[in-house]
Image (cartoon, rainbow, N blue to C red):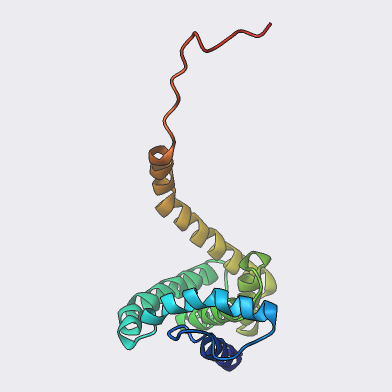
Length: 176
């Protein structure tokens, strides 16, 4: 699946030719419009596709994944999954994240929970334990996001709110 994505993206990149004057291959009308529309986005991504960017992001990404794997481990132990190791938790979370990234299905349909629960069941958990672990993880991550960003939304909403128009009593007419 990953190889198919890499080949597909490579083909789109080659056809779109984001660094060149125009596309490399002329396609039928709708496809040509789609490729030409993708060119500015691909050109904007070009500076990110360097080793320096990869090196700068590896540690934060690995740390983030390790923290969430730790959360899965703690939640799995809390719901009673016996012989559940941190390695098992990392495998379950890693697999569910891989499914999430590689499948073109919206995350709200439960792809993360279903795939992660399947791994937990394969590792010896019962279905209720597996589902509880992954649903609690979703609540934990969603709640943490709300707590960390909720106050920012309130501050920004107050700053971005247009000022109230001053209405004089002469402009307001009572209904007849």
